[in-house]
Image (cartoon, rainbow, N blue to C red; front, side, top):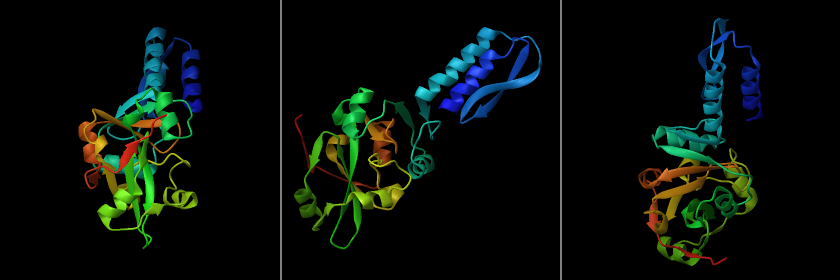
Length: 224
């Protein structure tokens, strides 16, 4: 982000006798110096303002400048899932991300990594303000799931910052079970893999993302 802002400031400081032609830097169209010609300084400033606005909020069929976990980004691209990225102040949990971004907590999907008695992993996806019911999942799958220890999560999600895992198992070679409360929301928001970006999906895109998962009701709301 700092490098991009520096480049934009540098362009603003060039004299008005320079002409600019389009090129791409970090996924955004900017302009580079060509032969001296007359150009409107206001036009250059307008173009730069447009670039800067896309660093804050962008619409993509794949990731742009935002920090998105590599495997998640590849999965979204491969399955042609349309999404938007929403930037927010640094957070330490899905709950904090929702508050920072001004998103209802029931619309934030969080992922909980589970392990059964045979060492197999499963991703449970539920609303950020809900508490998981392991007994419900154990009964449904005839298994004995427990929460994965933190150090194992770090090993499984090497392309993510600690505590900011995307709530989707397929890119990480694990099955997914999704709480049915998320299925019919107009929009669902996911951690992108860092602590400053959310991915926004409409109802269809979220169902496409969860295409291989099983829907159950296995969580309950926690009152704060």
